[in-house]
Image (cartoon, rainbow over all chains, first blue to last red; front, side, top):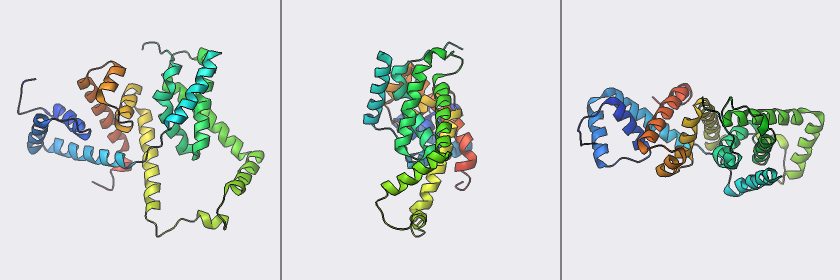
Length: 82
Length: 188
């Protein structure tokens, strides 16, 4: 993609989402910020997006440990082998 | 809709955490939850020949898990189950003191309220993830919760990076819509 200054709202939304995962390079950051500077809707969307990420990261996720997973896998394998 | 085939080798990696989270919000006992999840996989394996391919793998596994959880509730509420529960309380508790006292929340401790809120939010998020299309849900969980690399996910699902971001974006928009009432009321 050739370097463009102005992007549409759809692109800005996707950039905003990518920003949540720290995936933007400097050019993309610039484009997103430029777009936000004149688009109220995307500014709002970005704010909500930020909040969503913050809340989600605050959650404690219960996860199976690798050891537990391995145990279940072994049991499954045993069963499959029959 | 293409016919869905079961891939038992990947079940644990793909759905293990999701099912575990699903169980623990309902059972509230990590050991039991783990057992139920592994029983679900085993039961799935046994009745795999009855799977008709009308639903996705995950939906099918969740429906098995639901039955298992209901069975568990029944067991706990039966007379025999009640006796078991009481015995296990006495046997495992190494703290001394009144049963009731131990269950009263410490009001000076601000984290308890937070914990309750966290739990509710987590349940809500889990429910909303469950209502996403399966592909979206898997990718969202892999990226946001398992923190996998973009390339890894792309390879697994055979999609391009820009594809992945659009999917993630749509998933997040749907989730935010779904969680609007619960999460965002007080903060905006």
